[in-house]
Length: 137
Image 1 (cartoon, one colour):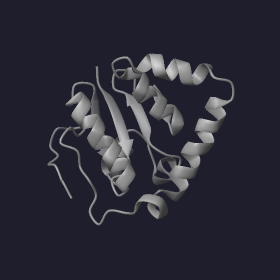
Image 2 (cartoon, one colour):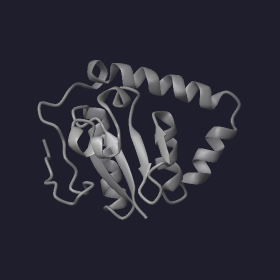
Image 3 (cartoon, helix red, strand yellow):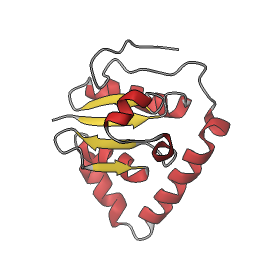
């Protein structure tokens, strides 16, 4: 089963988190494409405006299964080994989901100011179609 992670390939924080996932998963569960890859995104009906709402995770077996923003981060966490325990604990704490959503929105909307913008879009070695080359800028 594959999940597709759509991330901002120009955002230092986003790329660092994708590289961490690459290290943990080694392409077993997740494949990646950047928000800058409009051709791939158009195949899923995803527009640049959709990307403004944050990262997206798509269930490869059920493409209508999609999560975006903080829900996408939670879904990634849930899919990682033992991650479900932490996600469920987070969700069980009163008010934490609301706080987490607001925190995600602030990071999303200010990511370039807070973490900088890359000069070159990062492409994962574990890309959607398997043809990507790594960029270790």
